[in-house]
Image (cartoon, rainbow, N blue to C red):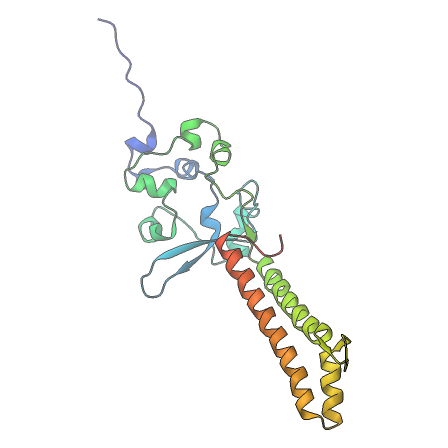
Length: 225
């Protein structure tokens, strides 16, 4: 009778994850880059949320660390995933993480390079963070850009809110100038009317800023694009 060669069982299915060699442990990483994202934890529910803000040392196209061998020197708080701390670190890993799947005795997905034999598969099928993240240092510029836009809007309200000063017909002038002029002359009532024009313009600008913020959240748009 001819011998039938049984297919070799891959190491991630035949061995306990704590028995992996260092090379086997390292090769299990799928290279998604999600572990390099900033995360938020709800204080009440302890639920963890992933953001699209990455570590400054992540190459956002290759999804690899630029300083991998010296990462703990540059960033001491970097997540150091080991076989010893895997169980306690699981909540901070995405559900698609290969380490999490193997630990839970689940099969690796078809896009994993150990299955597809191609490390680009995960990126081609859109399971990585490739070109989807911003660096944490960039968020400061985003906030500053939003602040500058708001300041410009409020300055524009002061400079360009008009009021009609013509006794007959339409004759517009900046409301802040007319209000200040009337106040100096003791025309308090007319100055208050100019102030109301400016206040109404401010209210409209605030409404537009809030509306823009809501629309950006609904359509998942980022500032500065």
